[in-house]
Amino acid sequence: MPKFKLEYIWLDGYEPVQNLRSKTQIKEFDSFPTLEQLPLWGFDGSSTMQAEGHSSDCVLKPVAVYPDATRNHGVLVMCEVMMPDGKTPHASNHRSTILDDADAWFGFEQEYFMYQDGRPLGFPENGYPAPQGPYYTGVGFKNVGGVAREIVEEHLDLCLAAGINHEGINAEVAKGQWEFQIFGKGSRTAADQIWVARYILLRLCESYGIDIEWHCKPLGDTDWNGSGMHCNFSTKFMRETGGKDYFEKLMKQFEKNLHDHIKVYGPDNHLRLTGKHETAPWNKFSYGIADRGASIRVPHSFANNGYKGYLEDRRPNSQGCPYQIASQVLKTISEVPTA
Ligand code: ADP
Ligand code: MN
Ligand code: MN
Ligand code: MN
Image 1: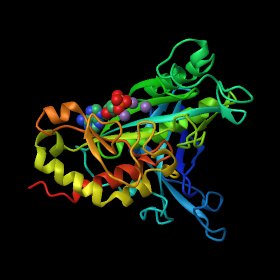
Image 2: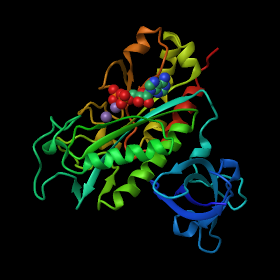
Image 3: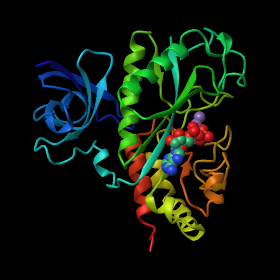
Image 4: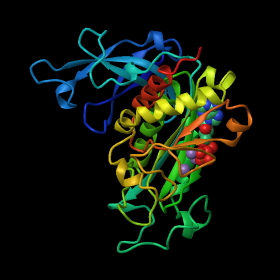
């Protein structure tokens, strides 16, 4: 029987941004293990801000499994963190707060910077490169440098091999900034895959001496774009019934819950959602058809199709937790009657 390398991955208890953690367990299986075959495991929560030293055991509960193309018999195992009873979700376990809905669809657009020596990849040691303009979807050494594309291509291949549902990648507006998009059906699918794709990217970059900067405005108040993680979402009702009346009620609820949303849309978002650089001010909810300067962009297709389809919440940032984002979006939707 082959020995599989099971990489158990979880989120630690740091605030406001949780870090990815992982460790390997070797186990024999006849063939690639299913989720049901994977055992619970434990870790020392006192080292991850998840427990006190005198009672430090936390439980890892596998919730999604992906092939790991970087290792022989490699398996990536996304886990939820549970209390020692193995049944009660730990306070840091936000995945457990997402409403069950197999017909909820999410698409996240993860933007990020590659960083080396404390600055974006391709920035000179002092000062700045040529201003923004040619970098977005750009090509050529002066626009994307010599190594970034190699990394994003490798990342894409590793994610596809893992069964992660990438929908695309592109170079972004700032030099050293990139994006990938992941779409998933089911209320947790895309969020799981974003976390695993982040994990694969961070691990891949280790050997390049490059780190990923997830902060939403790493270059501060300059003319360099920040990073977002737009959240595209739809429910079965939105796709199949919808209507202008329901849409307007839904937007009212989003407006009412503004602060609950901003709270989980990533830290320091006021630095990014300023009203500049294709953003809406963080403290004022707005929506608009094809409006990239609104909190929620309503795609043309949505309005032309009798207010049916998906919507894009443009406010979540690159450092946001997709579990908390999906959880809040579905909570707000659930507060609007569909009858
Ligand atoms: P843009 O950058 O113009 O906002 P992208 O193509 O980067 O557009 O992202 C749009 C994303 O919307 C797609 O990648 C996909 O994941 C998501 N999406 C498309 N249809 C739906 C749907 N019905 N429900 C939820 N998300 C969707
Ligand atoms: Mn995009
Ligand atoms: Mn983008
Ligand atoms: Mn978008």
